[in-house]
Image (cartoon, protein in one colour):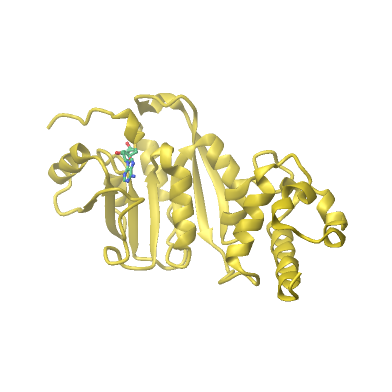
Length: 260
Ligand code: SAH
């Protein structure tokens, strides 16, 4: 059967290096005791062939019909969901808890991680290849220029490791930038001590204008002047740890309880 022709609009960059595919599959540790693994965007199955050898129940989800047909021929018996990861309700389709793995389509990698966040109590581990810059961003801590919304939101619930960098030329066609493999392991925090929705709003709003002080960045929340005169509000979002954001959210919650 002939190879799948790479389609740009689906973010298709097929990995050629089997050693790297092997290492990505090997980076799953079983953390949290899952038996099921969901691979997003298997393409022609370079990673699938190594995942399948592991002791997990593997399900793959692929949007590209041509790739799905290819997989059906080359991996008979593989559980394939044909469709868009961002649109399909997986709740009936995969046993929980499950890990997420893949050489992700880079055009939707942020959306994949937001979806992981929504399902964080079902997903104890994620191993994925993303653009190097995105991987660094997700894994970096406060004080770092890469630190951003996804870093804080994901690090609130996951311990994150940047595992290794992957060169452009091991893909067909090569992407324009380097790639990076990251691993997320669900941490001990079952839930936040503050309202999660408000926490997300505070983090997003704080980073919206990352060069501004929190006092300016959070103007739209209409916080009272005496509240925002504190030292914390002299800081910029990138200087706050996850814990700082939690405490800030708790304080805002407290204010709101009192009708301020
Ligand atoms: N894992 C393969 C392919 C990586 S390219 C390899 O390493 O070679 C990314 C893959 O994600 C492509 O196969 C593409 O068709 C698929 N894809 C893109 N958007 C998707 C979506 N929304 N849902 C599921 N798969 C998607």
